Length: 478
Image (cartoon, rainbow, N blue to C red):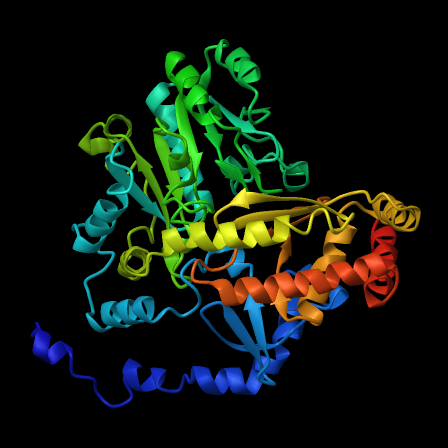
């Protein structure tokens, strides 16, 4: 039997030598230009088609903080943050160092039969921000965090049904899809779990469902990502009281809103007295590097699910709690604290929302600016003047949401700012930039947005020409 010292020796022609033939830099240099062709041939073929259609088929060379650079050296302001994943910005040096350190440590990771320190340390740090919660389960994504909460709620209460809010988005795996309020995502994937939608803010509807006695929980985003709609003041507290009265649980989906996005560590914390039984987080916890999701919950729920040694693995994840993800999460929490990014999200978000809100009276196509912290929705609506109203009507007849897309495209093409339409068939742009942005980025976005609005209200130009292209595409795909 060989000793550890002997085991580390690598004979000539060994696996180590064989592996030395892989050169990532050379591979990207040789074949990086094939990126769109490779996606078309081997992955989701509609993605490159969509990007080509709207002119988003850029080639980004590198990224840092809140910016991308293309191969010509032009910078692009990122107001999307990878759908919220890049909360601390791209390639943050603290997160990068943590990942280098954990790789260099050569930890005995994922043995499955030991207790490594990093998961416990990250759980401890997360729970400091929710002192009414006691335990954490680590998975690999926001959808998995939601799946965990649904399973735990059903088992802990012994009830099958989950309530969710209309227009919600909680993920696209089968369980999470069952509480997704957007029909376009659900179509063709039935049967799903026995769950029921209620309108956010409608306490009477919530109570009617609870009276049936089979509800395990209500899962709710404190601010919905689709459309950026905030729960009405007092709703979460009142819903929590109703749920507990009927022995059901409150699940807060903070996958996008958590970790400072809305100017509080968790969005539910804005309402005094709200203490969810289960909280789901992900996205920004990854630092933009390693997929991770976390479900935080009360002690009694975890102890009911893991009620005996026979049930120790009744809910688990093969890559859950891996060292790289835990290191990234710990680094992210350190960055949030050290750089005061939660406070920055609140202050910068207030500035951006105020600057944009001041434009509502100036532009008749601009209907409302809403949101909290650095999660902002810009909604467009039917204009008053006859000329603009007729164009608006034609766009709506072709496909609702085209005008918002007409705004997103020139923001990228002319002003090098990446944004997104907030949902299918919505005339809303959502801004969820890295929490690191400041006044310089606010100025750049507002100036660019003002220029696009000026062009839209002038009644001519490339923007409306592009609108005609989108209309033809929308009609052709019906």
